[in-house]
Length: 259
Image 1 (cartoon, rainbow, N blue to C red):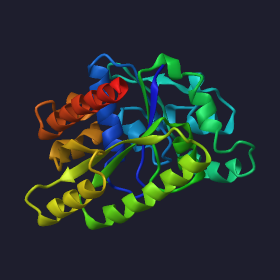
Image 2: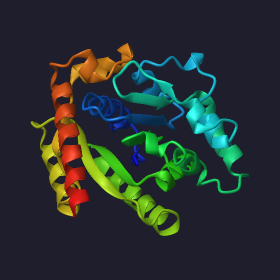
Image 3: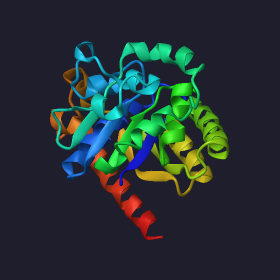
């Protein structure tokens, strides 16, 4: 049975969608079956996987409100091993509808459990906010992967997210744990970068990945072409970094499973 991982940070612009798209593609390249679930109304992950949102009728919105089953919303992508439950702008209105539903925090979990056994990994791209949609993802997941940008405000966002995770774990998902913390948009020559990395490693010595994702032009360009970086520019520093991250990601999971 697969593993459900929520990729989350309450701060926007930290590389969540970039990480979901490129980790999914890298895992697919290693013969893993991956389902990406885009629950951000902006739909950046959907676009980044080359899917035109205007052509889709069944999205994660229909899945969450109950008018469509998860299995019927899954679409293939052009990339090896990667399938998608896409997002759409109408997801932004789901908050109001969910408020009146029973089990409103369990709706995504109940649907993903019906397809979980088909995949090695289910990656959920969360919106940059604490909302009922985000809480659905935290309730549904086995673990949380946290991309964090190397800047001061990211430290504040990390503290807030940890508090949200603790509250969700205490109330709805006791088995959830931190999959890892990934530094993105890394610029080694900046003093602030070193300070932020040092501070996070001090408080989370076992959670931080050794691999860091650098600022890279190709990584910024790839989404506009609807391609993960390994399909857009495999020789780029960004592609090499996400390949290294995928290897470390799988090694950590293997080591954890042995314990």
